[in-house]
Amino acid sequence: MAETPHVVIAGSGRVGHRVAEHFADRGSEVTVIDPDPDAVEAVEGGRIEVRQADATKPSALRGAITDRTTVVGALTDKEDTNLVVCMAAKRFVPEVRTVARIQDRAGDEYGEYVDEVYFPERASVRAAVNALTGSDVRTIEEVTGELEVLDVRIDYDAPAADAVVSEVLPEGSVVIAETDGHVAVQHSTQLVGGRRYLIAADRDVVGTVIELCRGESS
Image (cartoon, rainbow, N blue to C red):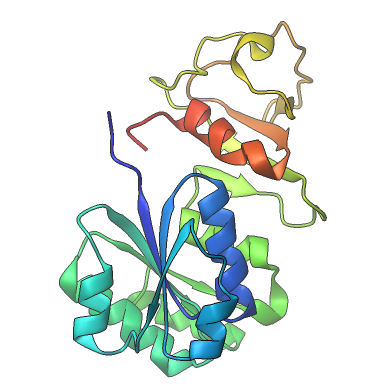
């Protein structure tokens, strides 16, 4: 069985805190790093590991990254701090995905140093989750409340591949349509590996839905 993916987030302010909760809901292990004791206390306990430290210090960042870390998101309110954290993470683990919170659109040029940038003034917290996740699972950003609508590609070897919708997905979720084909999906529809689907899910089953659609290898 594949090991649970690990996400490291620098910054436990409003954005970092909520992004950490999203990934914890999806079944990922999450470590949050922040030097502010008040901010650290606000992070949900139990499911999320919290380290009171300065992520720009090599010892703090290196200590948080494990061999299962798939992404490092630097989401503090300081642009220079975020770039330093991402560049340091790449030095420690070249293959790790890095996302930096940037203050303005001109930050697109920083793509040379990080895998993706996130602009909070033009996007929601869900956009930050998408930036850290990559392209295979996207949360529709305009949806409000506890419901999430995912645009997800089904892996060929995932449990949901070639399975009937009513038999594979958990209660609290529903497949709306094929993303590209504009085809409505019925309960009796057989899901096809390699295709993308829009799936609505309650927050507490989002992690299960992603695991069924993406498989252990992802």
